[in-house]
Image 1 (cartoon, rainbow, N blue to C red):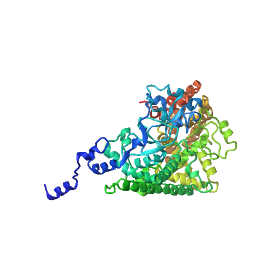
Image 2 (image 1 turned 90 degrees about the vertical axis):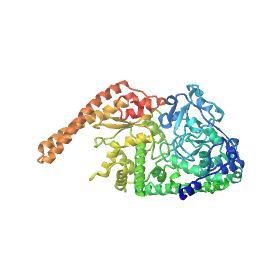
Image 3 (image 1 turned 180 degrees about the vertical axis):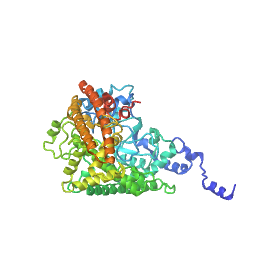
Image 4 (image 1 turned 120 degrees about the vertical axis):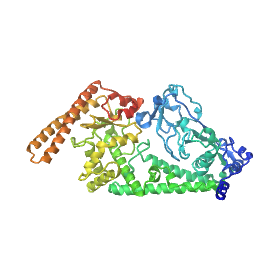
Length: 586
């Protein structure tokens, strides 16, 4: 062995006595931190003395009893309830269910709901102990983490399961102190030392040391954590998959300006938020490192890619991309989000005239919308059937309605400039640019080829806008809003769209044949022949689709939103796109 190799071994050699490990709960072999950790535990009390921490229930059948919140009837959602005994009384049997979720600190991952009908007695093989803690505010974390540990504040009104384990502070003044420790480099180092696996069990959390010196800093830490929660909640609620979503963040202010101006304002606001979070997290981190005496352990600062805000591109778009690539993806994504919000306004789910959800209960109608908003600046579609076509066959298709949405939301004066900006943004990442294509054609191509794929991804394969499709030739496609579907929707789709489109395709085919006969150019003739061949395929596809549509329309199929998208989506055979992806059928 060389002299250098001997030096290297000495540099990485640690000596610790068995007594050091006995000071640490569970006696883990955390040799690099054991001496210091032993001192920490001598100067600390265990978290279990400051908070109750426990795993939650097992439903026995998640497919039956759990849903994403946006699948069911909004009128049956019990959000922010104080007492679980009020659920059946109020006939709002779907309650928030904390299930862990993605890596996220401070606030968020509020996705799932649980059917608590009949006070949960319908649950099969349930484990529902710790019921006294249901609906109480708590700190929660993800059971399994592949990178670093993260915890979040959870407001009142939730129950939780094994994957979303929770801690309930005995003294509220320690609530945010505990959360700060869990989200810090100190908490991460200690947890990795006492449990070097990917699974963070309740007993690991209960063994976290609460240093005696923290008593002197509860107000300072709580103020900092309170602001971090506020920033994280604002970030979470700025996406439409939050039940507290109000309006597209591009439209929160500056209605009279251009989309570009709104985009720049939002980017500046988001940047200020994630830089502020970085400062606050590092302040907490530095304070805790000093209190716990770990300044010599090289724990490092919190970096921007560890600020778990969805609007933080350093976190959302990591993986070695350069700043220009990140900016392009972010700009494109924001325009995709804007289009999704616009579709929501077309369906009546949202409105430019009122914040939050408008129509989100089963079989709601245009009249229900007008009852809330008698004079709408941008009226929703009267039947919630929205054509997505690669050509303008209908004046009320999604592309034309988006143009009107942009005009109303911003201004007539800057309409073309705004459409150009949206189209250019989409071509940065969502779709490939095409030479000579107009802005509106760009937007039409995104809507007809890519929107539903993005919608599936956003809504975790539980779409609320369903894509009825004639097939691979895309003769006819349209979106139908789940919450406005009724047993007459398919019949209306036939009479108002499919049958008229068949006549339009026939007339267009005749015109193309006439153009071909009159053509004097070989190249033009070849182009027309190709277009005619494609059109004939679409005509055949549409005829087959119409026959299947008539069959299902005659059945007057009803939906039960309690059954969830996975079950309801499978009731229409192959009329719908991506059936296997949504229903899970192979």
